[in-house]
Image 1 (cartoon, helix red, strand yellow):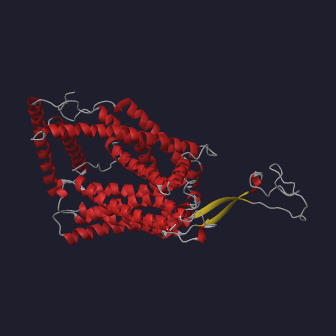
Image 2: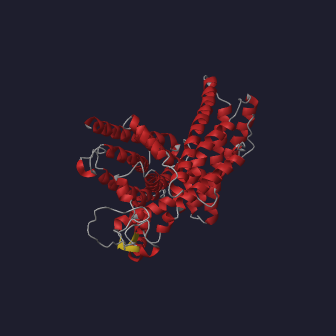
Image 3: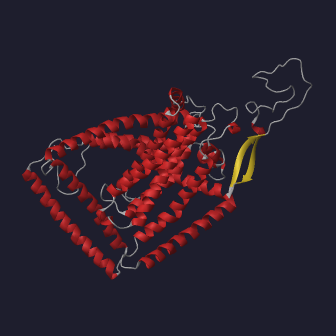
Length: 508
């Protein structure tokens, strides 16, 4: 067992380092050129937030692997666990809450503050806004906790009479109780035996529960859309790929048109900046800013497409070959992701929506993989949980570009400002809590007796006012419906080539 424990510790350390390095890589490549060599505090918050979200998802498989050290023990307390998972869970949840409700809002207010003000004034202004937000949140939480901060557990009142110890037993499935006693078995007891046991939840549990509910709403929307759009967007990106390079004359014509549009956008941006300096920042000004930002994003897409279909330089042929290979990789990853998404949806229907579960499905797959090698099932479990988080991120990015009534900061490769980064990191952190809760429920058979199940347990699902959301599987049903609608959307419109915003057209 010592080798298993050592392997678990080594894997945990390596994963933490890999996650941190990968998030730094994302930041460097996604950041806008205007943010290079500045905005270091928001960048630190972004890397920290992304790392906490990724590590919190990977902690659930680590929790399962941690229990493997005691699988031969007679009871859970009969051996020493490798990692103190309950303490680690609590630390991650506290850090998650502090980041979402304090540090990220402060970093956003500081970053978006007037650049003409001194650093001290920008810090003071950000702290004032965060302070006001914290007071409002504290009042809302306090009022809700005082009024409905209770847990209603549904229990059955069972009882039995006593008789002298018999020489032979006559119990059966049809008669499980002692003669004259009909309320000793939960399965045969009548509805009148059902009672409600009410107790006051602790304030930290209540805060975590409400954060989980908010995250569950985001997870249902973004995850349901993302589980379908993540693989299908890759597949249809391959279907819409440019199939040949354009001629030099076509390139000059399209580049000239894009140059004219860029000049128009610069002129509009200068006019808006002048209005901002004069203090006339009304509703019309904010509307025009959003229009210019949208047009700028579309212009950047057009420029990227033009660069793809007309590679330049000494290695133009190599660049085009890499573009073709990139689209082939999208096809392979899309098909593989589609299989994973279908497996997820099938598992939710088979194991969560059908009562009693039709089959353990993926739970049984993980257990059989563990029989092959101790950590193989845990690795597969980690992959499915992490894939769900990536699906949530993909869904958030898609809805941010498609729905006009939801304002979500879009993330673009090499063109993402820090306020957009911070906003999306906050969404990811909120959703990650629900991803953990969802995975611990979906894989309850495999992840039994873990510290995560201790924390989530029945308290969250029995909280007054929200218990029926879990009782009637509202989040799971919403997840499946949105996934189905997204599949239909892509089947109907995903194959179509996206028309550029201007007169820029690609040759097939």
